[in-house]
Image 1 (tube, rainbow, N blue to C red):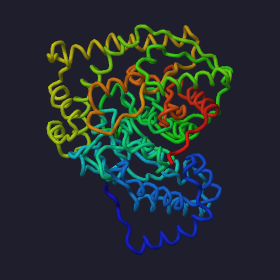
Image 2 (cartoon, helix red, strand yellow):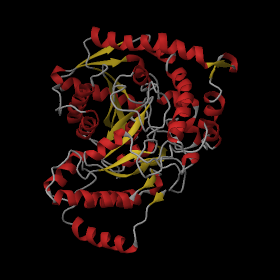
Image 3 (cartoon, rainbow, N blue to C red):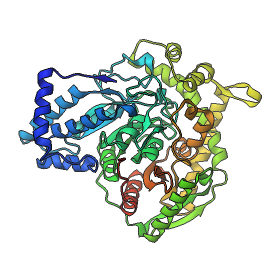
Image 4 (tube, rainbow, N blue to C red):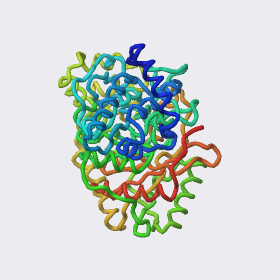
Length: 501
């Protein structure tokens, strides 16, 4: 982990100052939300410096999670001091005034390395923020640092040996460090679960915001495709990639989405007017804890007044299979070549692939991405171009129509299902197997392929495992704010998940 060291004098000053202030004014970061943090700074209950110092202490106290690639102590404290000076001058308060946030390390932050979790980009430092980051900073947010991820965002485990701060590799689950954090926004999930920050910004192609939040007890939104700008993101698929907010509460996701995309504030929906459809195909392969948690959650939502019906969707899996892998595998080649040419980190896609350390990602790049091939029958390789064209011209429109027709004919606000079918796996190389990859994107991949919004909300701890369980809601295209309002109502029924002890 890269840590920008303060000078000895500054460090002693901060430690002395924080020690005296935080015993009387610092909030409890185990329960604090980003919205509450901003309100406290705006009301003068605490300074941004106090918040940043508290979260830095927490971040440095848990190196075994491997959550950070760059923890920017110097930059974060300087930004916090500037915000405190701004508040002292009487400037108007902003929506995220003084709030520390973390950013996945495949999103550009000016002046900080943007590694995408791979060694070949270790020294690439963008000169400008990605627009999604700039909008958070314009709203008053303080970037605490850049978080670890599955290498090049190409997996669901976060088992990345390249950047390690603890005794063992791989981003670790906040609730059990022997388990994976999920991916690919792994470091964000671990950091939020461990309360190293109240909010963060990740990316999602086929589940990379939603999966780590399901496994670490946070809230995550994959917005409608095109709702957020894509510039300054290390690409996989132009058709599917999007940034997405991750946070400890629904109020924070509501606030971050409003800051990034605009619009008026929304309040929790009345569940008595909400109609949810259980996506029956997405109930496959559940373990006992996930099934018990999902059944209990549906019972509680029905008791709270929501209408819940079963929706068969018999063709969903087959159509989705014709879209996801062909689109991602084809588009990552042209997208990465264009990215390297535009931002000029000084290497080719072949050099990038040569430096990949994760066997699963390296095999995918060298065997499929660079030669532009797709797996065929009997261990053959097929030309990806015609399969991609069929996906874009036929199968993706079919998938989008299936969703649109289902929402309309069943009069649904959202489809509901477990975000992932199983609990977090052991943090080991086998967690990144093809079988585990397909299992953990089973439920999140379709929304990414169709470009519709997907919201992950914690639904408690497993009755036996005591590990986080996640509930996903997928809504019609463009229904992001309605989906957020429903998520806020569901959070009121289920409660927020407590941090790990």
